Length: 414
Image 1 (cartoon, one colour):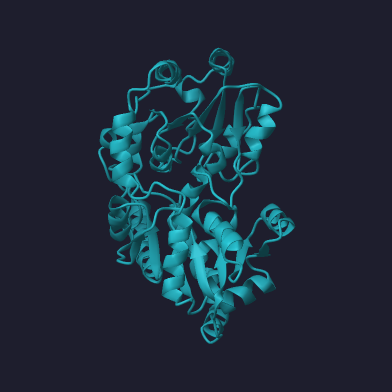
Image 2: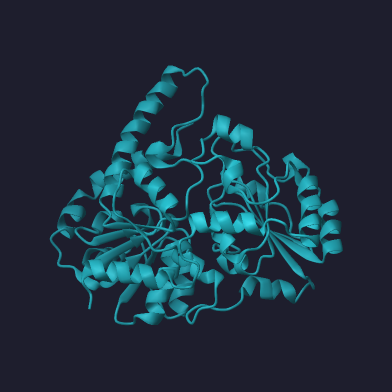
């Protein structure tokens, strides 16, 4: 099977050939530095750092015309109803605004927006977290099995793809990071130098702000159906090495048993798979019951409003753990397949034990034993503070403000 990056590079290359005239023309179009185009996650969702800078800019800086590009009809409809400027990525207006915009803002890469019509605009990548897993140029596969000729060919294609990846990431005028540690990894992964430590805009959602709602609408709806005291949220990372892995059933998740545990705890469990999880549709087939809610991107694409109200985070190798540390609340680590992941998927930037300030579970029985214990007595606060200081320079609600200032300074907006 093709590596996802190879497939993406093939698609990008073919589309690039088709759109060469548009790309060349866009370089000649005058740019307006007060028109900013935003996008995230290949245009599929309204989420992540781009989302929060977009909302901040709309609310706090109306002198900037903020445009959101999307391939998702629901996102388009929702944003337009809220009074925001939003267009389909490959629509006529999507192309026009991309051509005249003086500023392009992404959370992943140019696939978030209309990459072929952004010409000579200033470009900013807000990224999507402090990486634990090796990424980009650092992400050498952990697969040590004997390689066939076809695997060797794919490896050569991947190296070619990494070259183009490096060129794309070097075309950004600045990246954002939350700490020296994440800055160092981004510089290594993409061979870049222009990384500013501003904090991530999405983390503003974890604090009270003047420009964001105070409560999660999704949790408000649940509260109308069931009374609960605690919110447990399970947010695992994706796996490339095993597309059939079931992170619930494969590790002893029995719904009736978990339901009983949640009732005893007076808690609910929110389960949200990473949208990059290959087999996420199969996992969504489980029906949510009174205290277990399995969410897809169509239910809620952005977990940060829920994260703010989460009492205990359950996660494995997701960088969301560093964000959650800002709240100084318990984390139970669920790296059920850690050895297989490191052996067959990707290596890590850190020793896992050194960056995971909380108990480590081997399965779901373990996990709920730890939930009971940590609710009785949380002994991990000192360790959390240590890791928080290492990965979050800023611990306030002003990340979006700092990113906005960085961008406006580069654009020379007075």
